[in-house]
Every structure is written in structure tokens, then in C-alpha cells.
Amino acid sequence: MIPRLCEEKEAPDRRYILIIATVAAFLTPFMSSSINIALPAIGEEFMADAILLGWVQTAFLLASAICLVPFGRLADIKGMKKVFLAGIVIFTLSTLVCGLSPSVHVLIALRMAQGVGAAMTAVTAVAVLTAVFPAGERGRVLGINVAAVYTGLSMGPFIGGVLTQHLGWRSIFLAAVPLGLLAVVLTLRSRGEWSAPRPEPFDLTGSVVYGATLLALMYGLSRIPEAAGWVYLALGACGLAFFVRMEMRTKNPVLQVRIFRENHVFTFSNLAALINYSATFAVGFLLSLYLQFNRGLDPQTAGLILIAQPIVQALLSPAAGKLSDRMEPRIVASAGMAVCAVGLAMLSVLTEETPYPYILVSLVVLGTGYALFSSPNTNAIMSSVEKRYYGVASATLATSRQVGMMLSMGAVMMIFSVVIGRVAITPAEHAQLLSSVDLAFMLFVGLCVLGVFFSLARGRVREETQRA
Image (tube, rainbow, N blue to C red; front, side):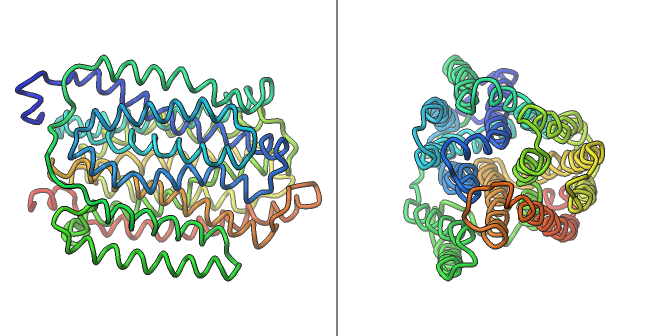
């Protein structure tokens, strides 16, 4: 049911919104996966070590994670269209300037600006799709949205590899600008409001505490095993406890903490998403380094291998989403998590002579599991809450995803700092790099196995929804 404001004025066109959300869903993963391929070239130009290269990705994820929940709340208060438009403009401008970065530190700062813009689009795109499409079609359109994400992931490694090899890594950012401009134009031309604004106060204090907590946790992970790393992790844990207590007492909190306590489907589905992304996001980063450093492949060839996983994800995600409209999403999602564990286990035994077909098969298995998990899990989360919480639910899901990605990269950077150290990767460090890659994949297998149990523990989505 479309919000009353939209009915009184001019109802938004569902197909038009689907196109805008699809373009936005494509952009961010395209950038992330293409930059993975370009990291060795960026490191060579700026003489950056493995930790700094990790921050090129992590800075984006950190800024996005910090902003997702606050902007999800603002979208509920001010209207989704306004927040989306501002976000896509910020993302497009920062992408343009990223291509002109004079140093790796400037690039990291600009990637944070990209993350802010991406957060503003991410929290609104899924929420508006959920709001304007009926329950019977929701799994299908969310599947299309997820397929757009995976299409971006699949095209990123190949196109990024070609651009990096022939035009340099900066061309990746410049090539994405026209897509950002297209999304801006489409949004400006879209008719009607996307949601009815609600004049409620914004929890600025909670937003600041929330952001500081995530920053402390992520920075702490990157500094382990140094003593400062443990100090920041402790501060982050204390901040998290304080944030939860404060939000429970706030009349209009930035995050409805009570939803987690009262809605088991919502809680365990978000926890499953957090675990899944923690276990899978760094795969592209790790394999990009492995294929180019340990196996000596050029960026274009490495990109061709890496597209196997997201292509499978893009092909299967709509069908998985549609399947979750017909049967319990927890069954489909839990099976997907188990398949992910199998794919990661296959990648945990890589050597300097591992056959390329074996790597491709591993990526196909991983892509199949991820497709079976993601769309049904998204459907479960968005279907388990009332319409008035769509913005917050979308933001919470996106936060689970981004925090999971951060934890994935944080775990990798922690392993790199212990095994390799803060040095540029040269042939002398290739053996340590391979050990780090295998160790990371072993850790991710364990996470996925744990995730299966949390995914099954969520209960039946439709029964929970009927009680609500």
C-alpha cells in the first residue's frame, strides 16, 4: 500500500523506481569489485603497504556503516526521495575526485566521502521497493535488486582489470561517473514523492555515539596485535553497551533497539546477514592479491577469473527471491549459508600450483550459496516489520551488511599485520601472503558454519508477521 501522501498527490511509478533502485544497486558493488583488481596497481604507484591497501576498501565501508542507520532514520522523517537524491549526488562527485587523487591518503579520505553517499542511497532504495510493491511481488523485485548488485560485482573485476591494464586505475572511477549522473537525472525526473515524511525529532546524540562506536571497533581491529588495538576494541565495546542503553530510554531513537528484542525473525536474520558478509566479502580482495602476486596474472586475466562468482549470483538471485515468496525464507537462506561454507572450504587450501579450473569451481559454488542466502534473507527482514519501520529496517539490514564487510576486511588486515607486517608486498613476502590467504579462508568457513545455526534459529517469517 502506497503512503497516503503519495495517493493524495501523485503516486510514484513502480517501474521507474525499480529502474532507479537498480542503477544505484549496481554502482556501489561495481566500484568495490573493480577497485579490488586495481589495488596492486594503486599500491605500486603510491608505494602503499598491504594495510593501507586494505584501508582503500575499508574506509568506504566504515563511512557507509556509520551513516546508514542515521540516514535511514532521516529518510523516514524527511522522505526517501530527498535523502536518495542527496546521496547519489555526493557519491557521483566524490567518485569523480577519487580519479584525481594525488596520494593514497587522499584516496582513502575520498573513499570515505563515497561511503557517505552510498549509505544515503542504500537505505532508501530497498525501503522504497518494499513500500511500493505488494508482499506477493516483494521477493521478485528484491531479487532483481540483488541481481543488480551481483551484476555490478561480476562486471567490476573484468572491466576494472581491462581499464587498469590499458588506461590505469584512475579510469575506473572516471568510468563510473556517467552512471552516477544517469541516476541523478532519473531521480530528478521521477514523479511524486517516494514516501510520506513524518515530522519527528532526529536523535543526533545517538547518531554520534553510534558512529564513534563503529569507528573505535574498526580501527581497533586494524591495529591488532598492538596494545592500542585492544584499547580501541574495549572502547568500542563500552560504547556499544552505552548506545543500546541510551536508545532504550530515548523517545525517538535513531535505532529502534526494541525491534531486536521483540522480533526474533528480524534479529536473527540481521545477525545471519552480518555473519555471511563477514565470511564472504573479503574473497575478492584476497583472490585479487593471490592471483596477481602469487600467480603472476595481469589485472585483466585475474578479473576474468573473479567474475565467475558474481555472475552465478546475478543469475540465481531473482529465482532465489521468488522462491522465498513461496516457501519459508529461512530454509532457502540457511541452505545458501551452508553452500557458502563449502565454497570457502575449497578456497582454504590454495597453493602456488592450484589449477585455475578448481578456483573457478570454488567460486561457482560460493556464488550459488550466496545467491540462495541473500535475496531470501532480505525478504525475511523486510517482511517481518511494519511499514512505518521500513526505513529503519532497510538501514539496519544495510548496516549489518556493511559492518559484516568491515569485519571481513578487519579480520584480513589483522591477519596481514601479524603474518606479513606493514611492508609493501614484494616477492619476498609472497609465501606469507599465501599463508594469510589460506588462514583467512579457514576463519571464514567457521563463521559460515556458525551462521547456519543463527539462520535456522530465526523461526518462521510468516508466523512472526501474523503475530505482529
